[in-house]
Length: 326
Image (cartoon, rainbow, N blue to C red; front, side, top):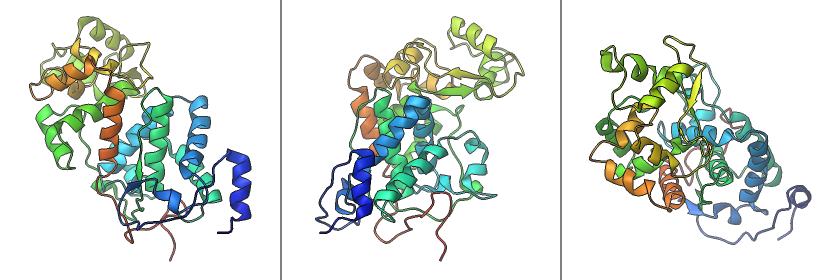
């Protein structure tokens, strides 16, 4: 099969490997989906862009993990969170602090250059997140691809689990997405990186469950530290690391679980994972295990299969920010 000049130029830019276009049907997600759709290794294109962005700003890891979660938990993993609009998912309260759209735009530009009209924005979110996790110390898990993009994005559809919900409520929320308790414990381990705004945990510092007192389950040293970061009625822009181990607050590892076992969980749901009988055994096991990266990757793959569009469903967007014009 003749290779296009567009693809040949891309090899010089990205150092990519040509792959053959032999094939199977594309009706479901599979590892290596684009090897039969594109002349170049699309996943390596994604990796090159994410790597450049990561070395400029390592905090994009937490941003992309959060973006994938917020996308998949609404309409399924269909990139609906990327669509612009006055009442799109982006405008919903829980999504106002979501970021990383510039990374997705940059990846989309790169993959369109080498494989025009074939790579979905939904797949880009999942591939970019995997690369970011890997760069931050996590395992480089195999991603399934073959998603197509949705064309509905409404703020009214955004109903995400609150950081202050109980373990039982969280279990039900994850169950509604065909994710079990173990999946939930590993996916919440995404809090091993990133930060939380004071507004999400300030009640634990000053007025837990309307008692006028702090959450008694919180480690006293952490309480004092967080109160210094988040004075009562402080501005919402202030943040605290979700993993209180300063040496690994930006590394994808099992440190988060060790912290919550010590009463150093910042968010209420995180702390309750370490105490609730449904989740404590898993938390304890993960905290002392070396297999977190592998298991976290497996949970991310399972998350990435929630509510996907495949085959002839949806579309492949020309721009990740807008549906295609007909």
